[in-house]
Length: 312
Length: 252
Image (cartoon, rainbow over all chains, first blue to last red; front, side):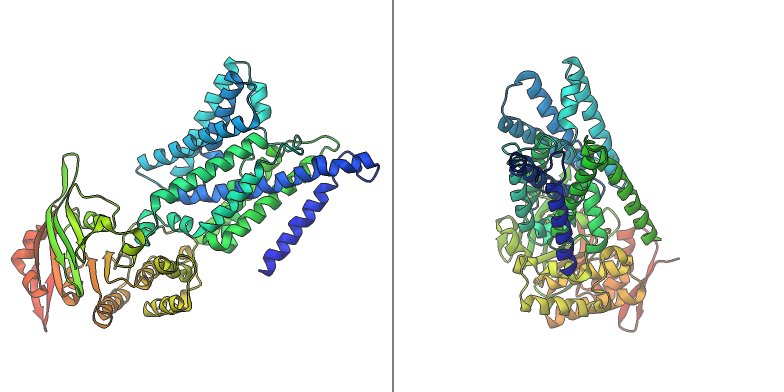
C-alpha cells in the first residue's frame, strides 16, 4: 500500500511536470496561461487515460488467450481498428469522430474475436506458438492495410493516423478517452472473473463463473479501449505487453491485487515516454510510438531474461 | 445422488461414450479405472458442463444438470481436471480462496477464511501458502489445486488423476485425506486413477471403463479379479491377496 501511494505520488509529480513542458512559457502572458486548459491539461489527461487503459486491455487479452505474450497490438486487434478507419477515409472521409470511433471499435471486435477463434483452432498452444500466431496475424492485417492504402494513395494519411502521437490533443478532442477510464473501473469490478478465466475454462466453470459471458465482456472491453486509443492517439506498441509482465513479477497475476498497479504503471510509463518525446528534440516532438517501441522492447527483453533465470 | 442415464457422446463418427448409465453413491469414495482413451475424462467434462452429451441425461439430486444456475451448481459439485494453468503467478492462498468464490463472490468472510485455512492445513501447504503457483513443483501445485477444491466444500467432488506428479508419500497422504473427507465430512468423492492398487486399497466402489462403456462396477473385492483386469487392460497380470487388501501385480 505504501509503495503504491509512493508510485502514485511519483506519477502525479510527472503529470505536473508535463503541464509545464512545452514551447510556450505559461507564465509569460495571460494568453499563454489559457493554453494550460486548452492543450496542456487535456494532453496530460489523455496520456494518463490512454496509458492505464491500454495496459489493462493488454492484461485482459492475456487472460482471455491464457498467454502472457499477447496484447492488442500484437494480435491484429489494433490493425483491424486501423482497417476500419482506413475504409472510412476511403468511403466516408467526412465522417465525425464519433462515427470513426464506432467503426474502429466494431472492427476491433472482429479482430479480437477472430484471433481468439484462430487460437481455439490451434492444437498446440505452447507459450511461444500463441504470440507467434498473433504476430503473423497482425502482420497479414498490416500488409492488407498497406495494400489498400496504396491503391487509394492514402499511405501517408493512414500513417499519421496510426502513429502514436499526443501532440494534436486539445480540449474537445480527447474526451472520449474518459470512456476508457470508465472501462478500467468496470474491469476492476470484474477482476476476479478475469483471473479465473485466466486459470482456464474448466477451473472457471467449476467455480460457477459464466465463462462465455466473461470472454465476450473481455473482448468488448479490449476492442473498445483499442478503438478509442487508435482514434484519439494512434497506436502505442508494447505497452499492454510490458506493463502487465512487469507488474506480474512483483505483484503476481491475481488481478484484484495487480490491476491498480497495472493502471498506475501504464499511465506513468506513457507519461514518461511522452515527456521524453517532447524534450528529446526540443522544440520538436518525436512520435511517442517510436519512444515506446524502443523502451518497450528493452524492458520486455529484460523481463523475459529475468523469467528464464528464475526457472533455472 | 448423481445419476447418469444413457449418456452418449460422439464426435462425428467416433463414439467416445456409449450408453453410460451410472448412479454415484451419496457418500464414499468411488474410483474410475480403465485404459487410456476409455472415456473417463470425457465423462468428467460432461459433469463439468464443458461438454454437452450427444444424448442422455445427468441428474443431480433429482434435477437435470442443465437446470442449475452456475453458482448454485458450483456449491453442489466440484471438478478438478488435469489441464490446469501452470504458469500463473497466483499465490496458493489466493487460489484456495478462489475455491470459496461461489459463496463469497469476491468478498470472503471470516467463515470463508476459516475454511480456506483448514483446507490449506489439510493438504500440508501452510508453509507454502504465500508462494506463487509457478514457484512450486508439480506435486505441490497439484496439492494446491486439491486444496482449492476442498475449500469449495461441495457434497460431490470429482478429481481427474489427482495423484499425477505426486511421489509415494504424498500420493498416500492425499488418498488418506480423501478417505477422511468421505468419512468425517460425509462427502462423495470420485477419482479417476491409473494406479489400480490405490483404487483397490482406498475405494468403496470401483467403476471400470473400456471403449466408452462401463465394463464393471462393484466393491474392490468384486472388481479386483484376474480375469476382469486382464480383460480390461489387455495384458497379463495377477491379483494377490496381501493381508486384507487385493493388489495387482502388473509390472513384469
